[in-house]
Length: 159
Image 1 (cartoon, rainbow, N blue to C red):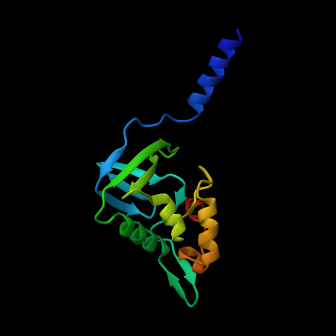
Image 2: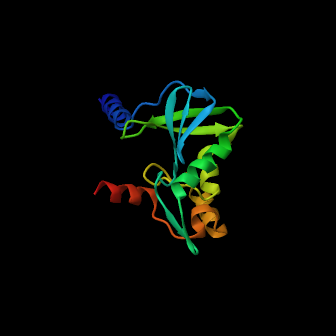
Image 3: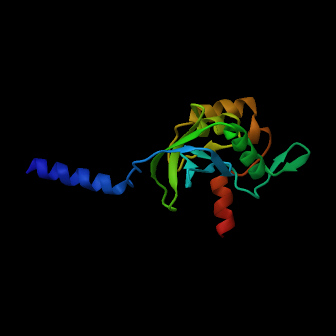
């Protein structure tokens, strides 16, 4: 009886988290925005990283910058001329795949957070929190000025 109850609990837990895609994708990456890319015809959002949206702006001393566009360019710089591999982790509630993606062996999500052009995606995990704290302390990327967190900016646009 205890074994049946344990199996039932495991089944509920398995249903609570979307299934992992069996296949990773490898190839040339097409950058969509600062945390989204297409590899081998599949779209992936960087798991654990959240970059400003295209059209989002930030305030730096004495100027406004298009931080969403700059974040996209930063991701382009990381993938140009190298093969990218994305390892899907789970299906986003919005329908896309969240994946750890690597360019030349380097974790793209972590690199975007390290350079300050993405924040830790707290909605999903805190995997890059220490990296974010170092970027903030060094005033890299977004941290050079004032900005609205991407998830807050999106929420404001929906209203």
